[in-house]
Length: 190
Length: 190
DNA sequence: ATGGTCATGTAAATTGTTACATGATTAG
DNA sequence: CTAATCATGTAACAATTTACATGACCAT
Image 1 (cartoon, rainbow over the protein chains, first blue to last red):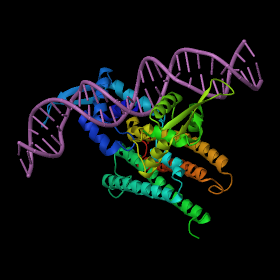
Image 2 (image 1 turned 180 degrees about the vertical axis):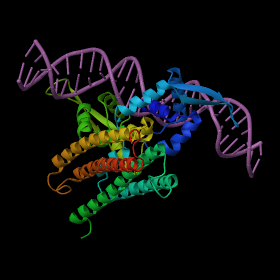
Image 3 (image 1 turned 180 degrees about the horizontal axis):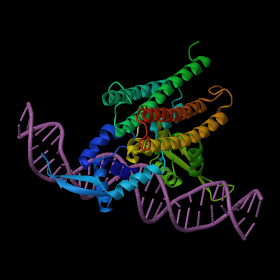
Image 4 (image 1 turned 30 degrees about the vertical axis):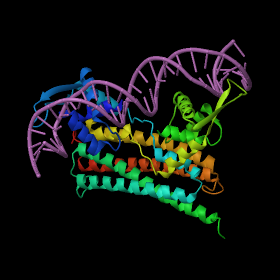
C-alpha cells in the first residue's frame, strides 16, 4: 500500500498525524490524497509493525500529540520501495469517461460547452500549482535547494506538465469540433 | 458513482457483462478500469433501480447471456451526468510519490536510474496507445467518423497527450539532475 | 459565549480487488 | 483430452470516504 510507504518516507523527522495531514494537503494531495481518518489508523498499524516509533508530546493547545519517527526497519522499507522502481496504480478520470460518452448529448455544441468548462477548471488548478511553484522556488527554480526540495520541486513540475497537457488537449478538441461543425453545417434553417 | 454512469452510457445497444468487460479492456481501462466481479453486481443493481433493462439471450457457446439495455430513465441519468459538467476524482500516482521521496536514496545517480526506468515504462505505454490510434483512425485521424467515434478518438488523444507530457517531464528531470551533478561534482576521489 | 484551530480518534458505508466456483463449447 | 474462450456469478478482503464524537485553548 502506497499510503504506508509515503507516511514512512515523511516521518524522517518527528511528525504527528495532524502534521502529516497538513503536509498532504499542501504538497501531496495532487498525487496522493489522504484523510485523517485513514492516517491515524495507518500510523498505529505501522507502529505495531515496528516501522514507526511513537512518542507522546505535550501540546500548547489541545490534547497531547503523538509524534512518529521512522525506525531503521521503516527506512529500509522505503529504500526497497524506491529501488524496486516506479510503482503504478490504476488511474480513474471521470471526465475522460464523460468525453468518451459525450456523443450521447447528440450535439457538438454541447460537447464544446463541456470541454470549455473542463478547460476553465484545469486552468484554475494550473494557477494554483503555479502559485505553489512561485512561492516554493523563488526566481531560480532548480537552484539553491536541498536535495529534498529539489526532488519535491521535480514532482511539482510533473503536475504542472500534466495539467498543461490537458489544457492543450482541450484546445485541440475545441479546434477539431469547430472543424467538424464547419464540414457538416447546422441543419434547421437554410 | 462513475462506473454506474459509464455502464449506463455504454448500454445504448444491448450488451452483456462479458461484452462490457471487453469494451473496458480495449478502450476504457486507460481512464477507468473495471473487473467482472464488479461489473456483474453493478448491472444487477442498475436493473433493480430501473435504469437498465435485462433480457436473456441464448448463446452459441457457454451459458445463456444476460444483455442489458439502458432505459429512458437510465439515458436521462447519463444526460444529467454529462450536462452537469466535468466530474473529477482524486488522482493517485504512486510513482509521483516516489519521486517526492526519492532523496531518501541520497544519490542523484539513483534518482536518474529511477526516472530512466519510469521513462521506459511510459514510452512502452505510449507505443501501445499509438498502435490503438493507428488502428482506429486510419490515415486521417478526425475525419470520416461517426460522432461516437469522434468523441472516443478525442478521448484517446487526451491519453496520448498526458503520456507525452510525462515522458517530456522525465527528460526535463534527467537534464536537471545532470545540471545539479555538474554543479556539485561527486566526492570520493579527487 | 462563539467560532476557529489544535488534536485525537471510531463507525459505517462505499468502492474496488483477488480468489474461488461452475459449466458449456470449440479448436488443436 | 486439454486448453482457451464464453459466460455467469459469490465471498473475502483491502482501501478509502463520510459522518460522528470529543475536548482544550485562543481570539473576538
